Amino acid sequence: MLLGFIVAVTVLATLWSRFFRRGSLEWLLGKATKPAGLVR
Image 1 (spheres, rainbow, N blue to C red):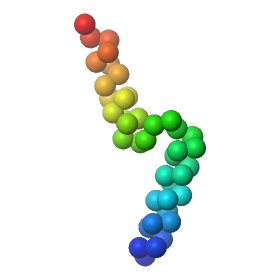
Image 2: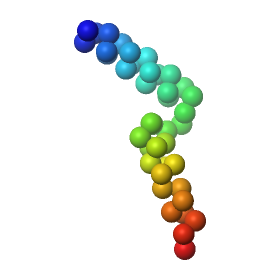
Image 3: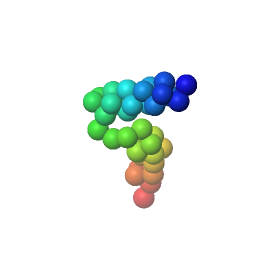
């Protein structure tokens, strides 16, 4: 079970890094804080 989890996480992390510049949490925080840039 643990080995399957490790393999799945490794594969997902590799795929994410090939298609996106930032990590998943960085991407999510960037989307959440983007409206703050419009406030003056």
